[in-house]
Image (cartoon, rainbow, N blue to C red; front, side):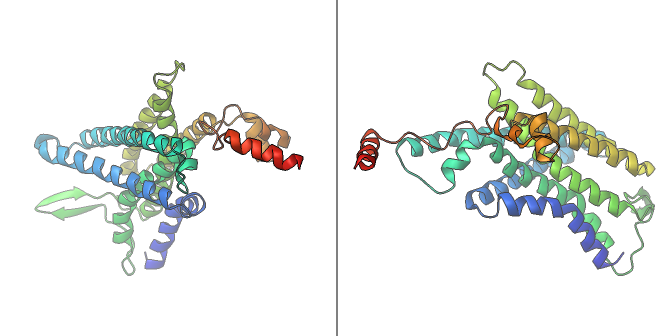
Length: 301
């Protein structure tokens, strides 16, 4: 595989996330900071899972062990990120109460689902990079046809992840792209459940269970790549992506009528009556009393 083909695979994996970044994040410095912070939280979760894997010597060769705790740490840090931002909300509330306005802060404070999209994209991008970067680097050499089925290291024959199939790079590319987009939906659904905890919503835990279970299934199904069952792996991961995005659409206030209207299959009026508000509160506050009196006097004169 040539460098150009490796570059094309990179574009396939990171093209859609790049579009999300440019449209929703790039123009807001605060969102860029939260995006980087999300990537950092994912890196810390990977660090802790690596330390645990290295410390438990008897289970180093057991992939299921590493997979279980890696996902557990990722979901734990997804919650910790939510907890940190929730604590930061108090500072934003104080700024709003004192009348201080910082560009991008007040509107982002209200749009909690946008916060989840930004932070989820950061975590997903870092996860996709670690999934794909070594594959792209190994395949980008001059005329490299593909990975061998195994390599001989330290007098031991070690099966290689390519399994002798040059399609492995393309399959890894598609899997990485799906993983990044799924992380966005996971964060939206997970944080929505955390936000509703302690409220009058009795089913706040459903979103958390869906995210954790689907994360484990999406990662565990990749074991079938060793048997070259790439279609099964990508099919299941794509189904998980669609289910989580539909759930995220629902918790963000979407409905069947709004979806039909978005695709031109129904009346546009469906867009004017969302099921629930997209944000927690409006960004507008009532004008002071003296301001309202001034406006009324100005209109009368």
